Image 1 (cartoon, rainbow, N blue to C red):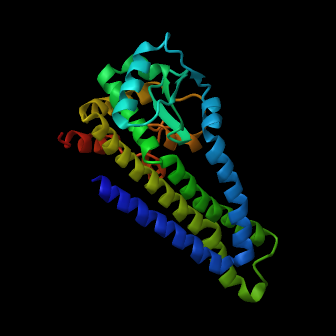
Image 2: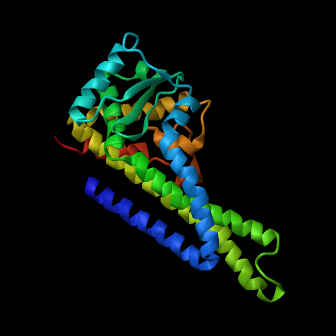
Amino acid sequence: MAIKNQVKTAVLLAMLTALLLWIGSFFGRAGLAFAAIFVGIMNIGSYWFSDKIVLWMYRAKEAKQSEYPKLYKVVKEVAKLSGLPMPKVYVVPSEQSNAFACGRSPKHSAVACTEGILKLMTEEELKGVLAHEFAHIKNRDILISTVVGTIAGVISYIGVMARWSAIFGGFGGDRDRGNNLLQLIILGIITPLIATLIQLAISRSREYIADETGTKIIKNPLGLASALEKLEEDGKRHPMRFGNPATAHLFISNPFRSIGFLKLFSTHPPVPERVKRLRAMNF
């Protein structure tokens, strides 16, 4: 299953890259290069400093081992099983049960748990959650999400440029109005939407991979399966009251609810499907 999802990620990334190259043929090299440089600089900065930004955004405080012995015990155990360095450990002051990992590499990583998840989870469930987060670190998902975010960001930026160009008459005169309108719709609306959907599909694929990798680390899928069911119910009772939806992909469970049509734009697969896959695993 993990190999299947890895292939899916590669195919989706190839589609996103092809979409960018196709857009380049519409917009010209100069516009494409400018967008690539602008968005690339932003994403490189995000890659190097995203851990500090996200931890600050969610008011995370570095946890002391004397105050959170259970948390440290589980983190150390999972770190040993995964073969990864011990990350920095943080606690987020929120009643919502959730957790995330951040950092540009295994040597520069951190895991953060909300106060809510520490109260709600058994030790086995917490171990499953943290193994999932270690899997993201092990699989270099921060790097992958940065690359994907850069390509999707360039496409979205070109879409903005196309819309502004249309407003100020950059798409030609009356003779070409029909073609220009079609070009505007394609560049300014349709392609950024497609890029976003591909980006989110990659995010969902990486979640499945992290579920499987995490359970292989601890050789127990049931703890994470039970944890995800609790997270799904608790998220309805305790919605996240601060933070930014742009960071939702970092969490083990989307802290911002997606309803109806908006589920197409979800960063996470449906919890029932994740639980079904986990319970079908054998070790």
